[in-house]
Image (cartoon, rainbow, N blue to C red; front, top):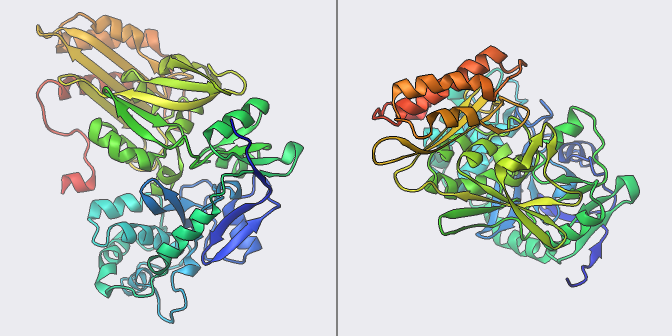
Length: 493
């Protein structure tokens, strides 16, 4: 491997100005820096955990398709992750113009703001949507605003404002439209191929040059905190006050952000975000589309990564159960050495995975279900959108010509200390006729597979009953009915 140059500062663009920071703490958040260091107080702090959207800003970055802008939560976005990006706050929307930007004017004209605390976040989320879709549907607006909460106005006024934005006509001086080519050129110039190192010892912050450089750095410092999207690590800092030093930031890292398909297997780089993966996965494995739409809000999906969700090993992570049911495998890397294991074998116990010191998840390989097989995933939560899973069940079924079960894989989250297969239930179904009698009988085996816990999301009894009912639902939906059991507002309309 060629020697990597080292740079001792983070470089990015804030609104229209270049920024270079040589003193950055690993746990410094973008929100605190904007408000305290730059006096840009339009960006608000509400929940400090990526739920309410009051802190929403746009981050522009160079991707395989060019310059893209995405809404993110500044409260859990670390400064260390901003190298080579364009940070856009609500103050930038008007540019030098005297009048409000159409997104802002629509919120005024349609009475989308009362106390105003949440308004900048709504404006930035709608701005991000408007740039991608000038005439969005109700469903698109609701999806874009899943991560924004308003406590006093009511969402109908905001929905009307969202529909009206483009009626104000083209904005000749819209900052991101006017600056797009210039910003892309400036961001390209920031790509110097260098590794960023700031601080030393326990306060060290590293942004590797690429995946190979990350492998080198992490092998030498295996106790470092690896930060990808920070949708979980961010809360370690803001809610648990944990020390994440030293930290290695790998978001948008070259070599970890590709999605490819070969012989019916989709390979997803560990740095691919939910948003980036959505198009491919929802098209090739349709059942994953509705699931991804319910993982956090848009800001969380723009930040959170597939690899991070797997590597974190949470028992309520949303992607491991469906990937396990599909027979996914992992590529683990340590230095130059790689090994591949079944995803289900990666999870050993609560907080413990089959990962050696200095080893990291490099890619997830997900088989596309064969034609004629059945696959479904169901997420149970207290509210439909932007909520933590109580129980999640994923089901893969292949039937023989005589209607018996030739292959079945059932995996759950929220039922054990790790994502886990329902092995006893599978055994009770394998080789049997796929009918109501068999399925009902198999539900008795859940007690052998799981001993769920009671917590703030659900009781043990509720989880046990829900798990059984999800299997019954899967049976009903694979035996002829086309009626959805749970619909969103847009689906109902």
